[in-house]
Image 1 (tube, rainbow over the protein chains, first blue to last red):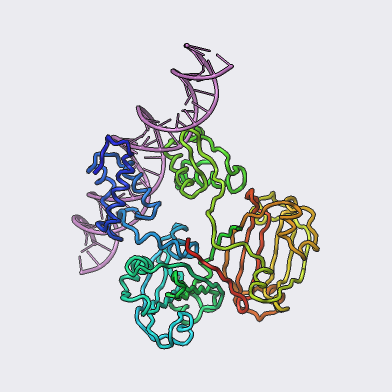
Image 2: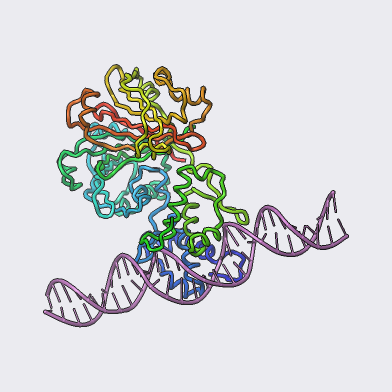
Length: 241
Length: 241
DNA sequence: TATATTAATTGGTATAGACATCTATATTGA
DNA sequence: TCAATATAGATGTCTATACCAATTAATATA
């Protein structure tokens, strides 16, 4: 598996080998990798060389590491593309914080008039409603409600949502996600948000509404998120054409 | 510059130190950094530790390395972006509304510490302060404070500001505007904003802070705007690459 | 002079080991 | 039984050293 006499650097051989295990499904998201010392012993190479392979895979978002616990396989990596700078998970990671989610609700509901209009479906049509609390370092940062047309995105389960919705849509359903539109506004937290976000009453929040579309311009998702404004800011990079 | 007794890792201290040199303009795009061995000798730290700092900066696209030649400051830190740098005027016109402005203040003031840091100029350096109310269809929408380094953008008058600041910079002064960075947050309107925007007390507002830079990465403008959140939303288009 | 060689300098790869910090588990003591 | 304490094992930081590979400049040679 590792050829020390090869002109290809050892760390690169190991890197490709691990990447291959992930892409072939022998290592699944969340799985723990052997420890650095195990790799070191197994292949008779230095631990620093193992680390170099792993560091590269962490930078490429194939893996993530938790001090004292181990190294694990990342959820699908291209999720970051769509959200860009305003993706909660990526944003938090970029700030050196550990993001997590708490699923509050997952069910199919009939679309009301507004939702039907946003999703471009008939009124009372079936829609997945997914409600989540987004946390950073276990502190509630945002309350997120996602609505997905059930006729368009079929076979959705809470497990899929927990892993990666976008990879399910793109890989399993073979539909191509093209982009989206986001609107940001400010408001005062309502009672439900105060409770779920564990914040004082009457403090300002940021509301983000996003609708995401497929390549054929059908809307497959509408997300409404409420961010606590005392802890969260939206950052946007602008480059002139 | 490097404190070995600090609990902050040495590589991280060096990393921040180099990043600071770049962002403050003491290191310019294309400039060569001292070699790894020079850093190692200068600070009395291991070359591997220097490399860890540099590797991180290469991953963050601050630097790039060429084997046998050296390490250099990257030309453009960020890749192409999704949205352009638009002014209030352009934004309102795009929404089919008639924009106008009311100039409240136009003077040269000495930069305080925060402003000096944001504009990358010495403290007490001369800065244009331009305060404006932005209106759409004669309704106040935002209170905007613009700060411009007077040594960088010379000969500014209130007449120029009334017309188009950006075209003055690009056409008359022949300086190229490259982009900027925006931060959006929510707050409760303060007394001044309540008065100027003619809004009720305690309503939420959107705060936008933008810093704009020239092609040579000098910051020429810092803008802080307060938008009434009941009338104004930020819209962002995301398109997948 | 023009070309080839060599030396010096740069980043790239790899090793071995030390100690720190964090996590989970097992053990001990009240 | 419950809580504090020890420990084993994981990643994180750092050192010191060695040699490889690419580039550049100085030097020797035809």
